[in-house]
Structure formats: C-alpha cells, structure tokens
Amino acid sequence: MLPCAMPKSKLRKKVKETASHTEQVVSHTPAPLESPGWLAPVMVAAFLAGLIWIVIFYVTQTAYPVPHIGAWNMLIGFGFIAVGFSLATKWR
Image 1 (tube, rainbow, N blue to C red):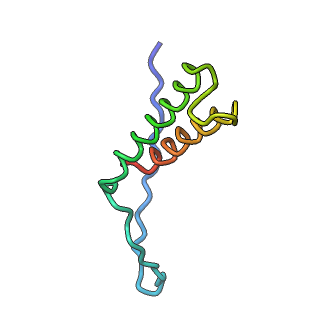
Image 2 (cartoon, rainbow, N blue to C red; image 1 turned 30 degrees about the vertical axis):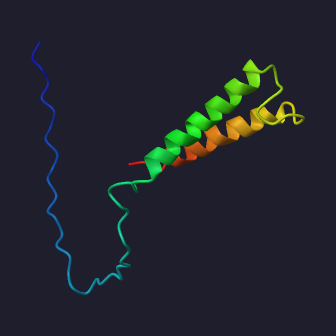
Image 3 (tube, rainbow, N blue to C red; image 1 turned 180 degrees about the vertical axis):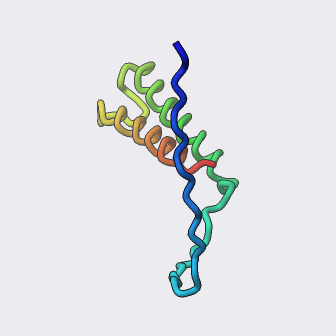
C-alpha cells in the first residue's frame, strides 16, 4: 500500500489594514512587574500569625489566646491564614 498524501490547503493572503479603519485605543497603565516590598513579609507574617494562633489554641486546650470566646479562636486563626492567601494572589 502506498501512503496517501493529504492535499495541501490553499494559503490565504494577509489583508493589510487600511487607515480608514481607525480604532480608539484606550491607554491604561500596565500592571507592575514586581510586587511591592512590603507584600511578601506581610503575607508570611499573616500565615505565621494564623498558624501560631491555632497552635496556641490547641496546646492550651482551648483556653487561650483569647479566653472565653471558645472556638471563635479557630476562626480568628483561619482569618489570618485567609489574609495571607489573599495577599499571595497579588505576589509576582
């Protein structure tokens, strides 16, 4: 058997743009290529604060870091971690 050759498609000529088709270009400032210097330390600090908060909550058998609010301490710890994740999305 002979291999079948596929027919070659026709090449289209590129259409040059004319001056009659003017488009309004809205200029905008490009996004910064680097993140600000404060972002990474604050992000890491938020992660660590949340982790330390939750660890203290478990090690002290739910008595600390803020007494008398109980399991809400977990929400505070995870809140710090959520802030860290939201800052991580802006890091370049």
